[in-house]
Length: 293
Length: 335
Image (cartoon, rainbow over all chains, first blue to last red; front, side):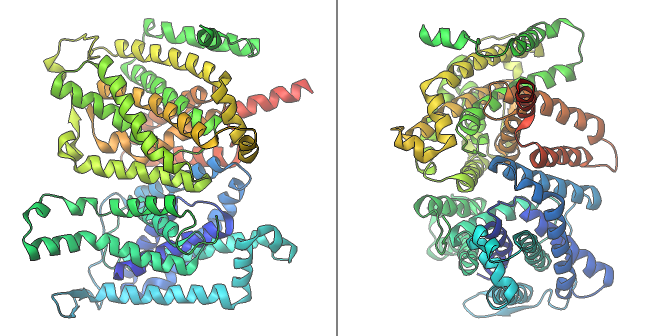
């Protein structure tokens, strides 16, 4: 549940980019990985608490998104769909191996911070680690901030208009080119913030991106393409799906059901996410909250 | 007979194409006679395998315009069927390969039937999801060796074993896959002139118009997907015998699916020569980059960075591929 809130923030950037430009960003998880490294290195380099590295991560992510758009994605938009898919895949390979070249392949994790090691016992044997709680809270705050920006400011409304109808938005005098760049900037910033939050309780290596890319795809599909509230609820759902093996173990031990022990549920942890994704795609391609077919 | 005549009939290509293609084909046949390193030989076999994968992808992705990024699951099904049958029941390759193809085709119907209700990006990502689900299952399934994979030990057999396709020298593998390659080219030549081929091209151009002309769009797509699948599964079975040690990460990862699609796009999707040209550029490039740069200390990943940059430049600036450039030049000459 708590992890779901962070995952929702991961998917937010993807759903904005998808909604505005109708392009699939395979490099999304790599942005997250860069956010994780940013959070980790700033926290270690400056000796501050990892939770205060979010502004740095946001700036890095925003700039990264803008650079990627003007340097590369702009040219992809002219091509056919297969070129867009493979192009962002190339971007993903590029960022991943750049990180491998710079940071090396070993796992790195954070071990300091005011909240590390503290936890709350909320009864029923459920223990909530303080870092996860703080991260979930902060991601909800970031989510609400982006939602308000999308719906209350002029810039955000222009962005929404572009995602609804590019042609129409251009007639209304909205600079769609700038809006595309802005979508990439916001998308990058939100996902790097999520990365800087995730690094508090997850170790980072250059290969971590693909897992999160696929989870983000699943969340976006569940919630509906381009739907911001949809991304939030779907994030919670997917967060719960990834916790299913925990419930499985819980039931196994509570009812002492021997047949349940033999099924290695933890190995299927992410498979259920893909299965849920597949089923939703087939039954309702628009997603639960989507308006874009 | 009609089909065979159609497959052998290349007369609608310009003479230059045929001369180039013929001389390249002859060069492949006599290639092992010249002195070559074993590295060049394995690159050559890889190239032939991947051009066959690319041909398979080209039916649905190139002619049909449906971007499928889940082909690796069929490589896995083919490879695992052959390996399991050989290890447990000593079934020869020539029997297990068609069985693997049947499995793949059945699986492709099961997932293809619901999947083809989706379009564009949605379809592409759903194929990735199915591929990843299958990979996850194979990674925990003890019967097929879970994440450790399977290993065919060549000691039990007496190479050269033509029935089970166990050889010591790569030359034999080269000629077997070369045979498949020529058959594949002939099949593709027939396919592009067949009824289904024309139906697919009209679906690619405009699906609604195709439907209004009485084409069963959904069924045509599902059928073509099964054809593409059979191709890929066939080479997957060969892969099991050639590499002799298969694991889910090698055979079913997303990288393989992407590489297959990428080659067809680089060469020029929707043309007969496209996947072959794409594989001919990309596979040697990838393995030589790895050979030269991959092992240098302190430079981990530099070969893949270059590779990624090449992908990005191609997809941004020449998405129609090499064959697209050739056709553009020809059109300019004619006018």
